[in-house]
Length: 445
Ligand code: SDX
Image (cartoon, rainbow, N blue to C red; front, top):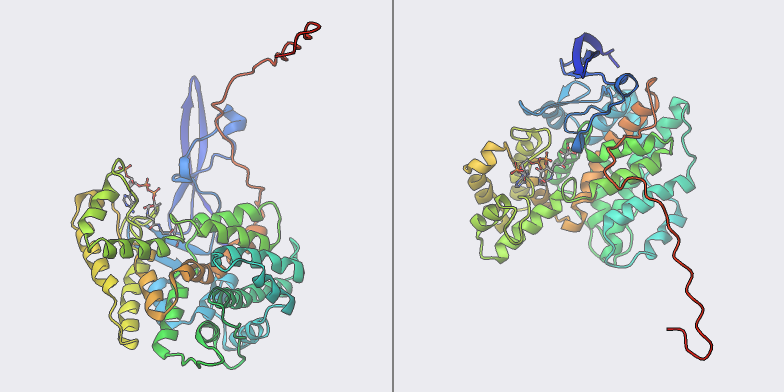
């Protein structure tokens, strides 16, 4: 990791005291005030809802520039990676910091193939979930269960063991995801195959069956690779920060990632891709009245108010670079599947209207990664209940990379934010007076 630079000081005046706080600068010129000594020096803490102004760590994994719509993994622009590399290459890059050599790539593929099956005893877990169980609940439960079958990583585990755990999780989560889908439709599990690559194997486990062979279309395999690359990391988003926070208690990788899966499930985060499709389906059922849903999203007092899912972002105040790429991928999949999706017309009108509406423009609310990803998964034939699982499948290498970076950070600390208490002041407890004994002959009330 390149070292952080000192870039002057910030003066903070509190009463008659002036405190000099160091300003630090990262490799891309981002600057922060280091408040590490603030409470010791002043007794004060900072208050920052949603951590909108707070950096929780230094990281060398992903760089985002929300104003200019820039996204780079380990320095490589997302557009270059999506165009030229497969998901497995990008997963290796995120976790190890470099794109794999030919030899590293074949070793990595060998390990991914070797680890693609789950322990046979784990198959039975699926039968204990009710039919309607959401696949994200299953995914989180199955991932944390991996820690009961495989050795937990210790803080200073050798690189080889960490590589083993990384490929194990990256490979088995694909099988767990496909098995949870098969379970939800009452079909038998389809096992991974040694002759199929990562994405083709997943598609085959999802859609093949003993009575219906499935042919992996190259355009669909390509689309899935691009989708997983685009979702692979996004610096300190909610679920990645969850993995780092839970990991800071020194739990094992599987437990930290299982917590990240639960955070991703939320409709304001990774669950938005499912919420986008449900919103488009609502509009379709409602006669295609896009304007009504836009007005509702703008007015918090309106009955049924909900944000326009797939729009807005904590960091991107410009068009999400991933959304641009997914829009093209989606068009290619529709062509390959010779499909026409009526929801696309609604989505196109929704984007056009929102992008012409001052409410959205003033607040810099543009389409984000979730706006077109759900439509693309739908065109591939993936059911909407699995959309957020697909997001998790993509995000696994990012979560693993951040967990490893945090565990090996020399300035690592247990994450434990402070608060500002606004509850009752000290109250004395006055025990209730003992009830008077009832007078003889008269019943106690
Ligand atoms: C992901 O962090 C990441 O990197 C996440 C992610 C990743 O790769 O990990 O990129 C993936 O989570 C993408 C976001 C998916 N979520 C959605 O599409 C849900 C809809 N979006 C909103 O809920 C919202 O935009 C957030 C939660 C994504 C971001 O909200 P912020 O940064 O907390 O901004 P805010 O709520 O303070 O919004 C500022 C204003 C508010 O209005 P006012 O108080 O100024 O009147 O904009 C409004 C908000 O009400 N607003 C929206 C809106 N998003 C924000 N109004 C209508 N529709 C929206 N979508």
